[in-house]
Image 1 (cartoon, rainbow, N blue to C red):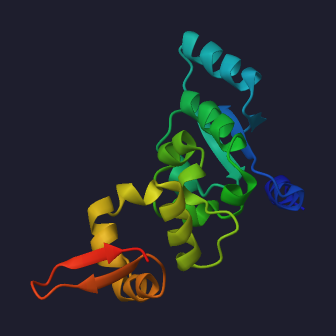
Image 2: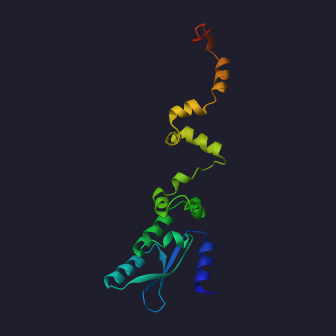
Image 3: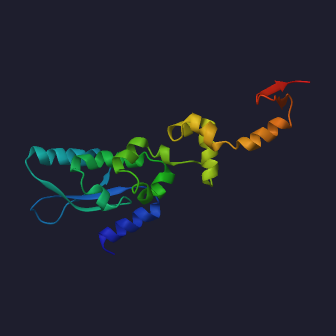
Length: 180
């Protein structure tokens, strides 16, 4: 089995986020060295090549993040991206392709994937209930609108009518609350 296919299979079987990179010098023979990122050795090698004026290139990049999301990063940035990926929760890593449809890799790493996950919620109704209870709904729906547009006031009125204190309406239209 060719080395790249073996590495892809190995990464898939281990079920963890890894980023492997084959680093070579530009214009040289098509050989290089594999690095599992993040790696301080990789950083030292890139720095050393830059100091010597030798241009390095990525011959192959393997991992769970599709190449299209990594192609615009410089060699020196790839190590910090790999470190950020390591810090993401497993449930984000499992569906990283889906998350990357909604935000960039930097945004996902910066947020640590936290703003995407509603644990133990199986429906949007449960998500809404959780957001209302913890107050995070305020960034989406103003509290005034929530009180006026989203509460079933007829149901609340029926409940009030069946509870003490009692309410009655004056001929002027005003509602009076009284307790027997």
